[in-house]
Image 1 (cartoon, one colour):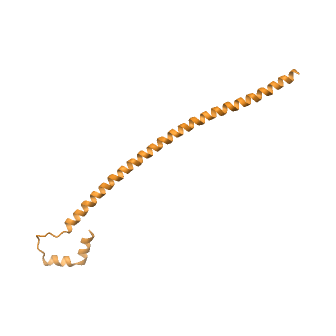
Image 2: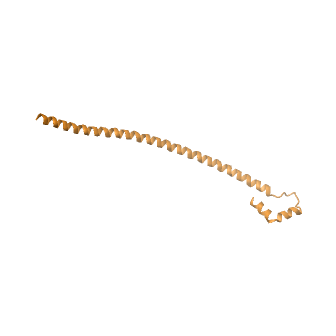
Image 3: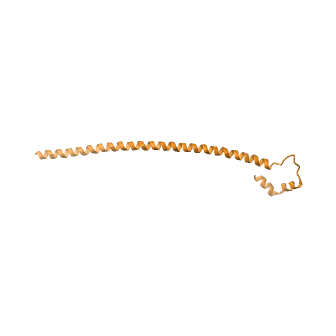
Length: 112
């Protein structure tokens, strides 16, 4: 009868040991996974901030580029008007009249 009690105690101890080990390993797994999740969330928030900063810099550069292109376009337009304008105090000669009546010359001037 003594061996039956010893065997029953061994079985009950084994069951309790297995259950206790399972519970403890789950808790340690959960803790490990929570730490890993927090680390991943921190890395993700840092990455989001880096991407946001990069996009802000990109927007600033595009705004500067747009302003520069606008200035170049205005100067181009002003220069084109100055170059295509006929001075009012200069009399027209026959050669200039022939050039102004030439369609290819006027097309080139108009395209500028």
